[in-house]
Image (cartoon, rainbow, N blue to C red; front, top):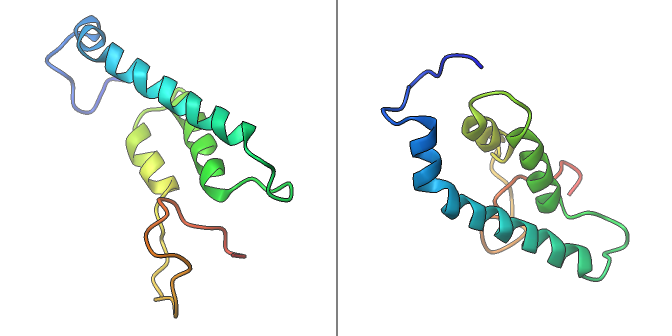
Length: 101
């Protein structure tokens, strides 16, 4: 494993002791969300782009590379620079929709 850019003053065991249960709950919450999506009625065979973004982010979590936070933020960020004429919904959706939408 490469040397971290910003080493923690804590040992790995101390980090796990402090934060494991909190993050275990987050993983279970994410699993429950995906289970609810799987049980929901099908939308003409299409997977929602937001669910795809979460699945892509999950793949980044376990790819063995560092800088997961930055890479997931990059994945879920809208890099467009041109303003849109009209927004498709009232608020942000958390990840950019595909180009064809």
